[in-house]
Image (tube, rainbow over all chains, first blue to last red; front, side):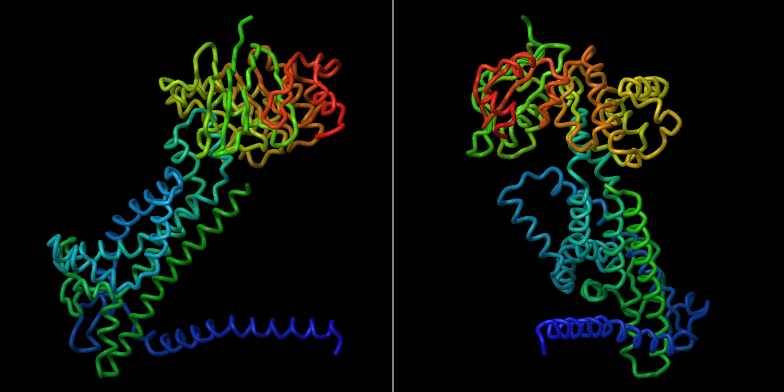
Length: 285
Length: 251
């Protein structure tokens, strides 16, 4: 075999390894989704979405679960987004680079990788007990906000970094203050990237289970939350609850609820991708 | 003779590196002053002293004084944003904001808190006319500035600087990213602007300095080697190093 033949052989071997690596994830996901849809799709109807949970599988619905999820997501959004974006803007635009801030930056990136159960324990101590919020929507939202803050901060910083410094120089050169430059030029130019990060972070929050179990979200709630201090459950916990029951009917319910949860996350990710593409097309530096 | 701008005993450090060494210079009002010299000689650093754009570099340190209209602009009482309304800047690469032509030129007024729409419109129109761009863009001021050609973008940037009515304009190699035709347009524009403004321009292009500047300063390795009327610098330089650079023997 000549060297050229060897190189071409290596090339095509790697190509097939790559195809294999890519398909593994996709195939498993496809099998999983196909299985879920086969089990649960026929179970989804209007009454499934609007019924309270019940001991009888055919009567049980996910009203409390998805409304709880909605409450949680809205409050998590309200808490995490302003804080996360402000922190990102500070670190990227205002912060002077020194050892202390570098330490801060590394730790924020590390926080994004901390297991979510740890955040649950932190939330249990700080929000449920010390702040006396109890196992409320608010306590859960604060906990999840903590969990997704690092993601939003990192995404904000990346988006701000992508804005060329010549734009800042131009704005400063006209006598703009740092705040005016950030508000009128840098943030609008980075908004697509920040929005993408925010939506991805929120869809992460939608799917989180562990920290909310620790905080004390209930498996069985016969009412929908009326306010931020009410107790709550969320879709993933409802799913977990149903899956752990022996009756086959509940497994079907779980499959149906999973379809709803996946639909929510896919929609949110889709929106994120849409905005990212729109933004990339608009600005060609 | 009174100078519009004066630099006295200027030393600039970036950390331990000395970028400028004991510079003294006086810049005449309503004239074009060219700063020339090889890359890394400190001419851009020197230019950016006049609107304090070096302040953002963490390791930057300045000794000496810069006076504009007899005010020391590095004095604690001077507000940097106010200073920059008087000292406009045009950058090496055209850097319009990703907004419409109109919004680009109006931005400097907007950040001053001016809301009078008729006033802003007049200023934008005047600035675009002064920048010799009005005829080309008057029908689509709402178009994104990024959709313009490089030469047009640079003139948008000049108009943007003019709209806030500065008295001084700093230009950092404003034509280095432009083709010869666009360069000729910008050079012609600079010659008309000097009637109203004091212009300092950094250029790599010797011929350009010869064509447009009234005074020329030659920098080398952080030192101001020679500063005189452009004619004198080009035809009868006192220093051998200046002559070598201008005739292309080094640099």
